[in-house]
Length: 227
Image (cartoon, rainbow, N blue to C red):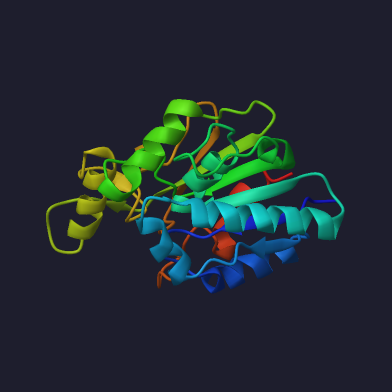
């Protein structure tokens, strides 16, 4: 029986943006719920607490899901920022002296990250991402199945139609002239020791008019790694 699965939204995304992905996963027999994040929760991460508001919601969702399904473990899918937030959640070193967990990593069987920037030079994310890479580098927990999915769709260039991707890639990895999903460059979306996948054509956002990681045509490429 597939394990229940929890989706962590990307930065500034509401849980409702992942309804279609929830339905698709449920159609593949994975009981799925999205962490109930809204714009107000993300605004709350701009202060000294960092992403603690999201970590607290994630922790509550995991505990509730485990109790409902009477299981000991879940799968986690982290989209964009949700991926590195999940990596903080799995650790036990106090994050900004506000959050820590001693058992979270024991409750997770698989972590799938979709377009997650696991490195960053951005001012908003760098402190948190540097924290997680210092304390939990790569596929840190050997008993967790790490799967990191990148999109190879848009090459960043300093010209019309490619400028936004160029700027986003440059802020993330320091190089704008590279491939990515339009937001996250391929080289930032992978982790050492993980099952690292590249999907040609996948764009970053569930709100994109084009196909993204959760679109039906790409779903089986990474859901097969879920436990």
